Amino acid sequence: MGAVDLLLCAGDIVEEFRFSNETVAILRDRDACCVLGNHDLGLLSAHGERARNAAHVDAELVDWLASNPLVVELDVAGKRLLMTHASPCQPRTQYVLPDSPELRRIGEVDADFVVIGHTHKQFVQRVGRPLVINPGSVGQARDHANGKRLSYAVLDPATGRVEIDNYLIDEHQHRAAEPCGAGRATN
Image 1 (cartoon, rainbow, N blue to C red):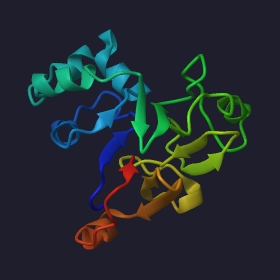
Image 2: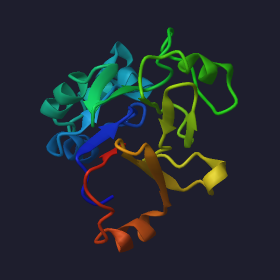
Image 3: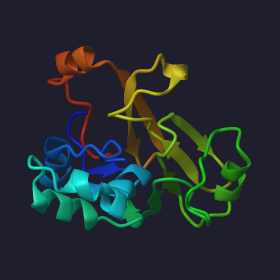
């Protein structure tokens, strides 16, 4: 990904009831701004107690995960960014896809950028004022449109330009030394 000003994560930090100390520690140690996704909420619920209490799970990392909010509102380069896991409109559990009615509702949100996840399928689309960004997924390649590769997005809030990088693990490791530039917020 290279140097960025801010690392954002739109949820699903864990995979259902499988806790990864390494993944959570990376986000915590990089001061990532995260929201909880449905997988995270499942792990943190009563149903996830056995997974949370497994011998390999670091309790401090579980506490860090639980400390993340459902919604984040930020000022980035003088513009308002809103991040939720699913739709920012009530109820905040709706899947948002480029052709879904839910996307039109986001056009009424008071934000310049709306970052979402939930579908693990990438898209960038302006809907009224907000530029809606779903970066796809760095952990679960589910998007048939990009060949089921992993992906992330880099946003330049000053220009509104968004770059999505689709990659396979081996490709990403090979390119890891190539910086993609500073001065950008990312998810």
